[in-house]
Length: 103
Image (cartoon, rainbow, N blue to C red; front, side):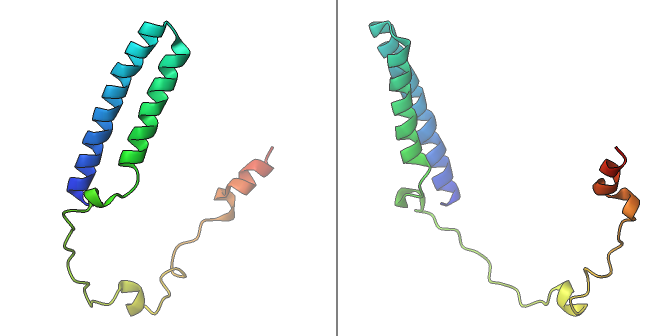
């Protein structure tokens, strides 16, 4: 999904939820039933989810052109993969296990 597709998806779900809220209010008011209002709004939420969550082809009309991958070596490759062993280790008294053993 590209950026324009995200914008379209957000506009669709806001419009669908707004319309569903208005329709659900009318259904609930006319039938004098809170349950009918919740059912109508739930249908609107379901339609909104089906329209905005999956990556439909209408959301991919403007593909992103990525830069080519650089060939520069990473810092870990230069150090021979020993970056993790040079890290400063915490003293045993700072661990949570020792803290909870005090009680």
